[in-house]
Image 1 (cartoon, one colour):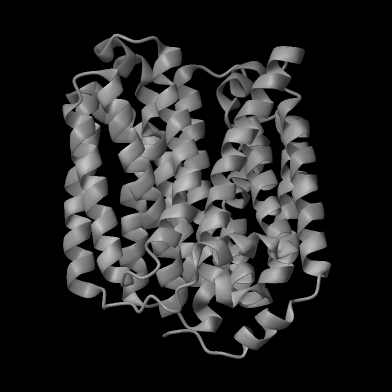
Image 2: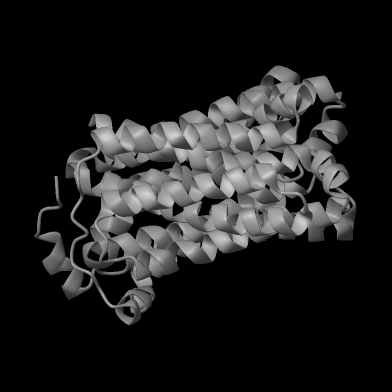
Length: 394
């Protein structure tokens, strides 16, 4: 595997930490900044919304800038945003800093994906993208417990100072080891937006969105689910989250490896089908802790296994607009997270039950499976067929 891919994965870990780390330390932040926990929660909501929108927009606006230079600029802005977060005296200034870090993080992640796709050989592309998603998933699922530990020891602001320091290290590594990356043929913004008119790729984006929605319908309420079905105390719940995180981190590499061995299209259908089954079966496995742990870790591994195969499929389907589509797919992921959390909240408020969550989540994943089948059944456009004949940059 190209050494540069691992550098990009490290960068993905660094910027990915900042999104959900706030979730575990909301009470501390709300007390320090004199706002309610509900108000402090907007730091997560606004981040996700800005992240989802900023990725495609910034990628379009910066299409003419050489990729390595743009990458370093985005990392520098991300560094500044974290320093501002560390120094924020009020909630308003912290919110402004979160908007800055969300926009720059979105661009860094999208560039990590697009650069990885460009520098990897076609036969290794899915596996390489898997390493990037392994970095993203590890930062999202392990960032919360790490943030809690650091906050308890040194205060919540230290978390963001640490991320800023990690960013400096990433900037040094990227500057030294990443070569200049041609930005390719720049398409006008209007043409890039029109790329969504490719229904084959659009349904692929919808598959990503509904899969993540199904996942977060359950994961966002996993703590009350464990308390209700397994009668676990906080110590055991933390242990379960850690086990889930380990499984999720491996999911990106597993999905990329599977796509490399059997192809992206087969992998997409297998992963979605298996993921839906794992959610439906999850409540049935709570009769014994060892059995539940096995199914929980299968669920965790599959939760991030789709992304590498999906990205590889999108690149192969529409190479001309692959950069913007990778950005759109990353936005679909964020929208899916928000949608799933919202659906879970509605279901819980209407039923008062968390045991029904896996069935609701599994139903959303079935919708994702249907969207994937529709996408795979559509023919590739003539424009894309011609582009497929060209070799990617290596």
